[in-house]
Every structure is written in structure tokens, then in C-alpha cells.
Length: 500
Ligand code: 5GP
Ligand code: MG
Image (cartoon, rainbow, N blue to C red; front, top):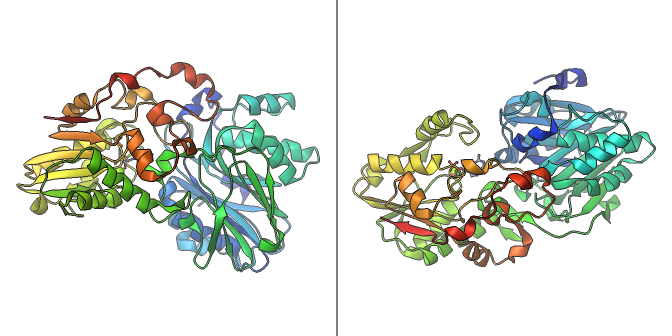
């Protein structure tokens, strides 16, 4: 916790930062905010929301709020989990605060100082929370250069903030600045911005990251996912791709909607497969139900003959349950037990340490496994650490056979809009057949769900998703990164099932 004073909140910027390093910035986060006529403590309500959205980012948390006197915007934040940063909520209590926005950051230790990336980004006149990532900032940079705004020390969100600030210095209102800058950004953005007068929510035209709007009495609330809406709130609808919603102290009765860009609807397919909470709603469907449909479809495409079906906890639970049901095989939820004290294995950069952490985190329940033919379901394979370790542990626990089922297609292309899948050569499915992957991870059999099967099971047209990691087709400008991607490989490895 770095105290209330903005001077303390942001450490000196890392001068070694440059735009070329954007590709290592992970920005798959959460935003939340509230404004309205009868909110008792907007700051504390926002605390509760970013806590419910903790699964979207555990590196750092922050809140900007307008205190009771209404004359300024104050900011608090720090490294770590929401509950730790805000002392179980005590430090977020600002009775009478009228409006607030918050942020959970999903980061890694890969670039610069992590403190530098804590959000909201703010200055006296503008606080900004961003979920998403701009793979290229060429057009924003051009704008900033034109007005002599230095960019070298700023990350993508800070450049967006600087561009809005520049417009506001030249007389634009906050909402005019948002309407002007949003179209200049390329990539994924679900944004909340506020000053002492208004709170603005906006979503980049592709809608790659979700953003839900709700009402809490007469107050307006925004949260990255429906699960983040505070208790007692009612989900109204998603903020539409390309839409900006302007809200002020009048709350619900005063909200205005502007279509700033023409929307195309390209929600990141990974939100459905892994990232969003199973309790959230996307495209009008419950995420848990969508994952269950993926599990059932996986059984239809690639049935296995086994004694038990188990999930890799927690993300694969709905799919594994549905797979077992479709197969008529016994479902054992605690075939692998997750040690929740081990956090954030996915972002550990050192593969050896990552392996040790996963091994400690996912413990096989030998009593349930011994002598059994096991089908284990996971949502995805990225680099292979999880599946390799899980399969090894299941063998050690005495499994007779270990079949691995993945309820999404192989990831063969980098993710550029916010997950941790930047380096294509780190992906185990890069230039490898499913049989080669099966051998590496040591399974009796390995099956991935086809892309077509994924779409069919979801019952939503493929055009409504950003599918880059699976298809190599990206919905936004990706700039120079395009030259580094090996696009020509998917066709070489058509088989999605391999067996010993
Ligand atoms: P791998 O161990 O193969 O690199 O990653 C696959 C595992 O990580 C799966 O169990 C999946 O649930 C999880 N996973 C997939 N994508 C992400 C992500 O973006 N962040 C985190 N923390 N975990 C992920
Ligand atoms: Mg997992």
C-alpha cells in the first residue's frame, strides 16, 4: 500500500522502457467503477467489485475516487491482491465518496518495474483504468508526437491517457477526449475514465475484452464481468463494442450512450474457454454452461474409454463434468487437488521453477487414481507445463492409462490482446503435430477439440470471436509483430487426436 498521495503512488518511471517491449506487457486485467446519486461509499463499493474480479489479475490493484468534497480525484493502490492492498477493505473506506473506478492488473515481472504499471493511470484531471492491450501504438504515438508529448517512458495505457489529457488541456471535456482518442487506438480496450464530474465507460470497436453495465439502486455500475457487479446490483447489458457511456451524479437517470466507432463484436474466445469466471455471462450465456457444452462436444469428437473422468482444477471443472456425463463415465472432481496457497504458476518465467510450482499446486489424489484408466480434462495447453506435470503425477499415483482431453483447439499462434502467449516458439503446438505433443507430455492419448466443434458447441457464430491464437487471424492492427509470426503451419497438422 503506497498511501494516498499521488507522489508516493507512482514510482519513478523506468527509462529503459521502449515501445518495442510492448509485446511483453501482459494486460489482461479487470476494471470496475460506480457513480450515482445515492452511493454511500463509491470507493468501498469499487473495492468489493475488484475483489470479485480478482481472477482476472493478481499482480496489483488500485482505486481512484472522488471524495465527499468532490473537488479532486484521489488514488490508492499497491502490489498484490486486492484484500492485501486495501487491508480487507478498511483502507478503501471513504464514506461519502461519489464516484470511483478500480483496476486489477494481470502482469508479469518481465518488463520494467511492476509498480510502474499499477492502474488507474491518473493525473489531477483524469483517472483511467484499462483492460486490454494495444499491440501497436503507431497512431497514438503520431498524435502525441504532433503535440510534443514525450512517449518513450509511457506504456500503452499511459499513452492513451496522455492523448486524452492533451485533448483536455486544449479544452475538450473528458467525454470528448475519449471520443477522439478511442478511434486512434489499435487493439483491445475496455476502459473506465473519470474526473470529479463524470465517469465514462468505453469499449474499443472489436469488444475483445468484456465490459458489463448494471444498476445498483439509482447508481450506475460497470465491471469487466457480470460476476464483478456488486451485491444487489442488476445486470443491464454489455457496453457495446465501439460505444461510450457517459454517466454523472444523476446515475441511471442521466446516462448517455454514444456510438463512437462502428462495432464489429470480436470477443476473445479465450474469455469463454479460460479467462472469465464460470459464473459470468457472455453473449447472453452463462460461461459455465458454455464450458460444459465444450466438454460434451469434446467427448462427441474424441471419445475415450476410461474408468473415471477428472478435471484439472479449477477452470476445467464444468467441461469435465459434462464430458463424463456425455460419456456415461464416473466423474471424480477431486482426482487432482489444488493447493490454493501456490499462486500464479502461469507467469513464472523460469520453466524449471514453473514446473516445480505446478507440481506442488496440483496434487494427485492417489486413492482415487490407483489402478484406474483416467481421462483428465483441461481447458488448454499453452507451453505444456501443466499437462506434462499432471500426467506425470497421475502415472506416479498409479493410473493404468492417462488420456488427456483439451476442450479447445491447439494454440499455434501468439495471443496479442492480453494473455501471456506472446512468443510463438514457446507454444508447444507450434510446428508440432498432436502425436508429437502426446509423446512429449507422456499421455496414453491426447485429444483437442476442433475449432469447428468449439464454435458449434457455443452456438455463436465464429465471426463474433477473436480467435488469433487458434487461427492466426487477428481482428485488429498488430503492427510490426506481424512480420515475426509464422502463419503457415496450421494446415500441416490436421489430426487433433493421437493415441499410443
Ligand atoms: P501451460 O502450463 O500449458 O503453459 O498452460 C496451460 C494451463 O494454464 C491450463 O491449465 C490453463 O488453465 C492455464 N492457462 C491458460 N491460459 C492462461 C492464462 O492466460 N493465464 C493463466 N494464469 N493461466 C492460463
Ligand atoms: Mg488450469
